[in-house]
Image (cartoon, rainbow, N blue to C red; front, side, top):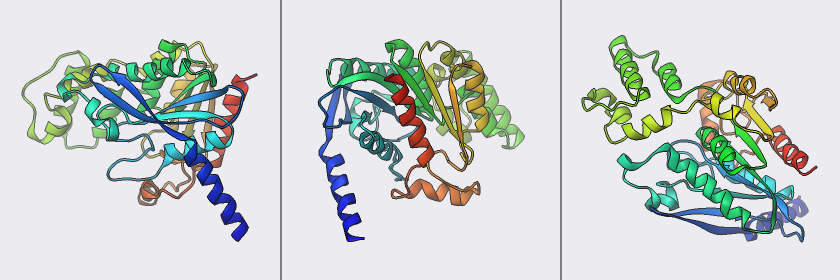
Length: 310
């Protein structure tokens, strides 16, 4: 047991020592990330990891939940001989100052940032292939950036297969009829590219005037249409106990991109870890930074990268 603990300790040290801070300069400020590169003499594939929505940082955490999912994925890639770069999106964590005023933020800013990271990585001769892996909302960001940069591969991790406006309507369907009607009307207006000044006080946090331009920019993208544009290998990964994104989402993406490899993992939830379907027990994993990633996920992701090298 002591020998095993020693091996694990030194493995942790190796990962830590090979994690280096990196920066991306943008017109509105600096975006900060972490680059992990195996200590090898030949060029290796590098994976750009894009976090999901909300205040989710480069490690897959937010102020209320620490699960280290994206950090664990980066560490797993490193252990398999692959490099990775993960970053705090503009306005989040260390990249907070790069976030412009909320009224100025657009979904395209996230796309452009991801594309800029790939272009920066291309200048580094330590890398042989450039893969984008987007988690949750990061999937849509990633697939558009992958087309824009002509990346070598794209991985969707629990990515939505519906437009954001449709997802919101589904989530709000159980609300009382007056609230539901007001929400649907607001979503329809934003999908048409129209802002509105009068907002129901109960819906202010969701449809406040300052966030409406961003929602308009986000709502215009349909992931099933965007994934059709990719002319590169695609891996779609979805868990069966994901309480935020369904297997149907992944199947929608697969239908739109028949050549993609779809992997549905039994018992994996939204943060890429094993979890029961029962809601409270599932949510409990969101605050467990020690619970490991689903092992099938790691095998599928690394196998996909290996195939890109052949």
